[in-house]
Structures are given as structure tokens and as C-alpha cells.
Image 1 (cartoon, one colour):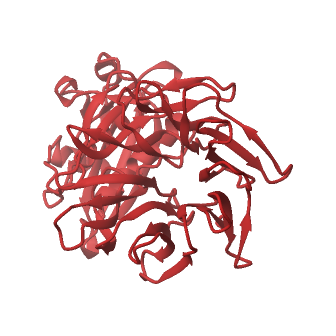
Image 2: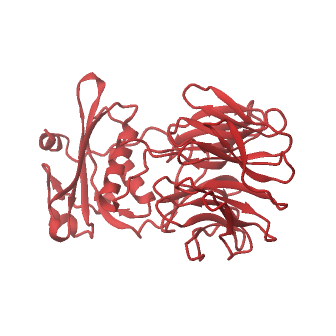
Image 3: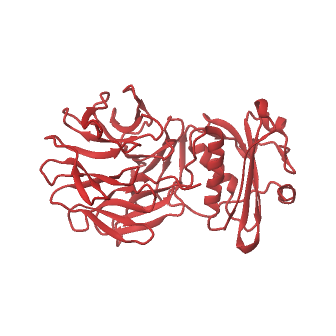
Length: 428
């Protein structure tokens, strides 16, 4: 069936009709990844999502791949389900991706793809394959699943292209100027979670992707809420006198860290969801804020001015000791651990405020060249960072790969966007 469909449909090209609120504008790094040839899928005419285009875009944004332009793909590269490895390899690609989208019963479509090696001892062999059913409505998710499988086949890490992000949209003059939104990581399928006349800040995902913690000023003072995305049930978690800010869900799902000033100076606390109790972590005369968990939930990183200027510190729950982590740069803020590594993503003050990676030896590697970056959030597989920045005079989101290769801006067509939070990996 796979052979016949390719023969019948040939190499059809389809336009993407769906629109994203966030339009990705690539600014660098598209020629630095591994070259891969992604041929247009043979698609049923009723399918209005160009699966191959979605896959190419996903792979490119990871910073690890450089999909070839369709204009340079040999016409004889894929014929009747056979890859002409020599022809496609002449482009410099190390692998070829091709597939079909076939209508099946029940209004569903079968999405099937193969990846064939073009170089080395496995030349001509299928190194990745998948097929599964999808509806028209979920076709972009099916395309992201293809990307996930390709990414994992080459890197050994799970892809994160089916994940979602949360962020705050501000549209002054609107009935509800402040909105907490979720969307696919590439800006499609945007969905409002909370609409308010007062500011909303710092969303944080539960590790199962079902809930968001965030700060709301709806009562004219900050309070931390937890909201179920599907049921819309909401719980007020913290509304003490003073500061209630920066909620951060632990990776094991048992606690939510936050900054509270209920006992004086702003310090780090966490709420134990099982016990229903608050626990104080720091007690320092300086300001401690922006808590974030280590990947194993056994430590908290936070920003503190206890050394004079803001730097990153780490509290270890086993030793109950706090140590300073960053030393380079005038200030370092908003730490986030890169999953699978001991490195951190931070905002560092060097010619403005920029996204940087702090490696275990303390060295800092600049990932961006902008000067007003804030609120970084790392993809759950550690491959990319989404953050807020000012682009063309408006606050919006941007992407950078964790190695700095790929860069892109995600300007909004309306309003300003801030405080991005990357959601968890979905089940396979």
C-alpha cells in the first residue's frame, strides 16, 4: 500500500492553511545542523497540512538539523517507494525522509513515513519508520510525532515537538487586557486559559501537563493560583500579605516552590501538595527569589542578592546547605536547569540582559545577542530555550537552541507576549 500511494500521489506539495498567533521568523543557524532531505509526503487532497513542511521546520528549530530546500532535492530521489541513495546523497544529505498520508475509514488518515540512510555502512537502509492514524484536526500533532521519531533516531533523545507552551498575552484596551494562553510549541492551536482585567504573571506547568500555577493580581494584590486546564477548576494556593510570586512546580509533581515575604524579606518557600503545608527554605536578610527545581527535585536554584548583586545560588535538600553557582557577569537571574545535563540557562547582564548557558565549570556561553531578554524556559528534552525579548519595539517570544546554533523570533500579530513556560513531554 505504501508503494502504491507514493506512485499514485507522486510528490504533491500542499500549502499550510492553518494560522498561528505566533509567527516564527528565523534569524540564524539554519545551515549549521546535520543535512537531511525531507521530501513532500504523498498526501490525500483533503489534507490541508503540509506534513513534510512541518517536519522540516521542527527539525531545523532544534538546531541539530539543516533540512535541505525542496528546490535542491533531486526529482529522481524518491520514485515508487525507492530512494535513489546516490542521487540524494549528492546534495550532502545524510538521510532521506519520505511518506504518505492516506485516507482510511472513520474520517481518519494513516500517516506513515520512513527515513533512509544515505551515508556510511547503513546506506540505503531504513533507520526509522512509523505509521499511525490521525484526523484532520490533529494532523499537525501527527506531523510533530514524525519529527519526534526522527529526532530520537538521530540523537537518542526524545523529541519535544508535540509539547505545548504557556505564556501571557497583554492587549491594552481590550475587555480583558491580560490573558494566560497555551499553544503548541510553534504557536499553533492557541487556547485561552485565564482572561483578566488585572495582570497575570509567571505560569508554571505541572509535570503531567494537566495544570498551571500562576500569579494573578485580580484582587489588586498578588496571589498564586493553580488551575486545571481541562476542567477549569481553580485553587488559590497563596495570598499572604506582601509578595506571593514565582511559582515553580517540582519535576516529581509533589511540591510547588515560590517566593513569599509573609515573614519579612522575600524568601524561598515550597508548598507540599501531599501534606498541604508550606515549608520555608531560605531565611536571609537579602532578597531571595525566582526558585526553580533541579531535574531530580532534590535541590532548588534561586536568585539572591546576598552577595551584593543578583547571582544564582543552589539549596541542596540533602545537605541543607546553600552554595553560590554563578560568578561571571555583573548579574545572573532566572536559572533553569537543562534536562539531562548539569548546565543552567540564565539571564546574564553583559551589554544588557541576555540568555546564556552556565556550564558545570562555571563558564558562561552567550546564546543571544539581544539586550532585553527575560523569563527563559527550557524544552523538556533540553534542546531549545524559549524566552521573552523585545523585537521591533514590542515584547514577544524568541527561540534559541541550547547550543546557540538556531535562533528565531516569534513576534505576535497582536499585543505583547511574555513569561513563556515550556510544558512537559507527552507520552509516546
